[in-house]
Amino acid sequence: MELHAVDTVDAALDVLAARGDGCQVLAGGTDVMIQLARGEITPAVLLHVERVAGLRGVEANGSVHLGALVTHRTLATGVLGDRFRAVAESAATVGGRQTQVVGTIGGNVCNASPAADTLPALLVHDATVTLRSRAAGRTVPLQEFLVGRRTTTRAADELLTGVSLGDPGKGSGDVYLKVGRRGAMEVAIVGLAMRLSFDAAGAVTGARVALAAVGPRPARSTGAEEALVGGPLEADRLDAAAAAACRDITPVDDLRGSADYRRRVVPGLLRRAAGICARRAGR
Image (cartoon, rainbow, N blue to C red; front, side, top):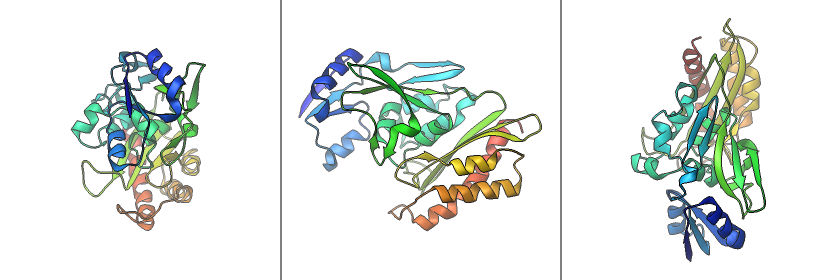
């Protein structure tokens, strides 16, 4: 196995252009090294990009741009402020402190685990990902970038350079909630992120709901979103949203929990998230 350690984006793109088909990009290594040890991946080339300083920036001016190497710990400290609390909360639940210090947002996105904590939080903020190759660059909605378990639309010669989030505007609140067997260092049995926007009368004018660990990829529940919009958060509206969310998911039985348990958890988690969003929006 070859190791290429680079300190510029251009150098990384050169390696990917030449050896992309057999190349595994490595940053913090919190997922990659485990997969290597288990024999789940067998790349011919490791491309180490952790020293590329240009991928570590955080730009927050209305909308937000995160360099691919921004760590979970950086996000967990609340660097994005109160408008993106779901992102901070999700980053704070990724493994333990050691994992958060070295694990990166770009790595979490590209690993595309069905149970990834940060992905639902990014989805409710209409995240897009930026990819570059020697030939061109492109921006893709995160919902389209994630296509299955550990599967994305990244081409072999492309490097994910950043993640952008939309401006949530005024009168909104967001949250990330996670159910696991214990309170820390646990893979989610169910993860749910929500962002709600309200008008002055308290009616929901916009809704984003995304879930993890209940399907082959983290994804938004458009059914739940549609059910929440159009009025205040009354019981029948929440019930309809919970039922819609359960229709939108495809959970499976695994060592952490059964599909039936996951379906039973989602309605209560959704109602709790809606209440938190309303309080955070001042409604």
